[in-house]
Length: 149
Image 1: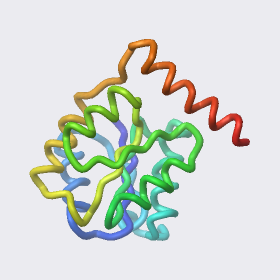
Image 2: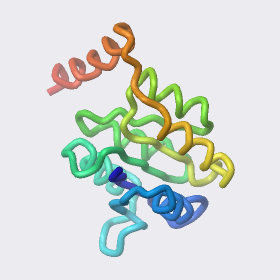
Image 3: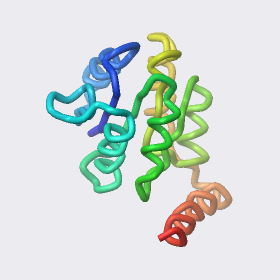
């Protein structure tokens, strides 16, 4: 799977995330502080990763900043992106299942190595629900985006 990854700093689990994705066999598209020549601010880096997903250059994205909040907000400004800030495996599993989230947002400050492993396990095992009410909610997000244009 091709994963677009962004971080505004190389602190916390940022480098470990890249290494773990490679260990799991994923190809990464790095942005921000993880790339050599890109602006590393969270808004720019997260937007770049989200655009990779929205435009089909990546299957999913992972965006990181100190709290994860700014990264998730920036990613969610890109049409077609459903970014979820996840601090634990249960939230990651729910985000994939009920929200069909396509971008994972992580806190570089509070995500431990053990939590990173658990969150990634849940994220990659998770799949979108096929239940009609869940699909209707996700479809409504697209309708909201169209109405905002």
